[in-house]
Amino acid sequence: MSASPIPTSSGQMDVLDPQDGSLVERIERYDARGMQQAIDRADAALSRARRMPVHERMRVLYDASDYVDRHRQAFADILAREGVKTINEARAEVARAVMTLRLSAEETRRIVGNTIAFDQRPGSENRFGYSRRIPVGLIGAITPFNDPLNLVAHKVGPAIAGGNAVIVKPHEATPLSAIKLLEAFHEAGIEEGILQVIPGYGRDAGDALVTDDRVRMISFTGGRETGERIMQRAGLKKFGMELGSNSPTLIMDDADLEQAIPAVVGGAIAAAGQNCLHVQRLLLHERIYDEARDRFIAGMKGIRYGDKYSEDMDMGPLIDEAAADRVEAAVEQAIADGARCLVGNERDGNFFAPTVLEQVPDNHPMVKDEIFGPVTSLHRFSDEDEAIEIANNVDYGLHAGVFTRDVDAAFRIADALECGGVMINDSSDYRLDAAPFGGVKGSGIGREGVGYVLNEMTEPKVYCFNIRFPHGWT
Ligand code: NAP
Image 1 (cartoon, helix red, strand yellow):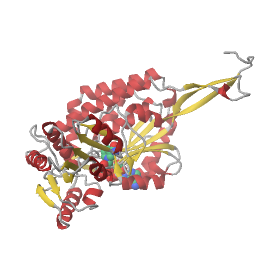
Image 2 (cartoon, rainbow, N blue to C red):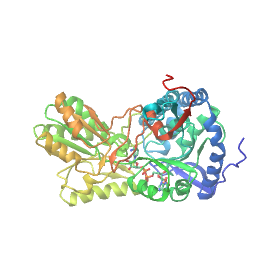
Image 3 (tube, rainbow, N blue to C red):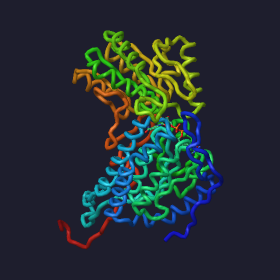
Image 4 (tube, rainbow, N blue to C red):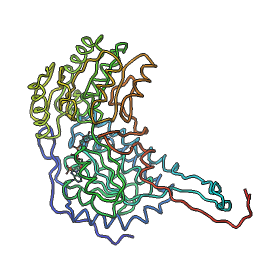
């Protein structure tokens, strides 16, 4: 058993409710020294993580998943209190986390290698061998505030499935969902040190995790600037980088608007726009522009925002005052630079109304950068090529949505869009946790999605036997 002591905290941190600033909980906070102690502990646990048989990894993951499922209301309450989601959005995230952990359990038995034809090289006729996938080792998981449970599950589940040890550094604003998830794994009997959750600030606890040579992979979800800083600091490691975007959704002139508009409204306001798949740019064919715009505005006007705990609310607040200031300033700047505001641009504390802009100047930061708030800009196009050009004219590429009834056009457009996933007749916001997920350009490196990230969290090891058989033994 591990002789490494439990990490010591360096003080406390307050977790505040973003909607009114009230104290949710005061928790232990760890700095660089605490993180190093956690790394010592994980390092000592590594050999036990590696030796966990597949059936045991599966049992732990299934049991943890069942625990979350049984306590889903408690998880949803914590998630809604510390984060930006309404109680209904929080419940949906908990259900997805249950699925992510179950998928992790199922994928564990599919971590397989392959046999290798060593006899393809003259002189190697007597050699026989195979590869099997071995754990990467210690994984540092750094997570954002917007999906504080499911995005942690997307790192912890596959890390354990792959036989790794993992330390989670959750976002300073939303550590409680991750701590509650740790409880599920403790109940499932995970051994000491294999999974730890270390709340603290990115600049000290996070940096200590990133820069330690014993950490073999950083699995990061967060903003692009933070991701780039981490890559500069980290040294020789593997990286999974799930970064931001400013996703486009295209509505062609033959689209079913009854289907399209509710989907894009939902994708524009989910998590109050603090969502990497947020419908930030809505591209409308000129023949349906006016009708689609009017329907979209009506949909956005109908969004109820306010008290997260009310069953009737569609949308909650921004994460903090600084975020609300940033979104408000970005909208004001776009208007000052010539954009028209069609609805929204109202602020009440940390709440920001669903906002629709049009005539945003080309190459404006409002369309080039990630807004990370409930703001969508409208763009008019006259044909497929123009739509593709507008959609691709950014330095991000996570998801895109396309609404059309023409299957040939759907195929052509999906092929031409520069991004990690295209949702046909869905907004950019649709995601299945079992599918590969990640971006191109500034949206990141590598793929999550349980079965896919397992390829990143394990590595092939080759076993070659030089056998004293005569030639042609097969
Ligand atoms: P963020 O500010 O980049 O923070 C993400 C995490 O990085 C937090 O835990 C943060 O710690 C930590 N961190 C900050 N500086 C660090 C450093 N120097 N070293 C190590 N860790 C450090 O991102 P966010 O505001 O939480 O999330 C929003 C971004 O995440 C958006 O861009 C969004 O699009 C992206 N996102 C991407 C995906 C995806 O799958 N592609 C999914 C969700 C969100 P602190 O808590 O101390 O700040």
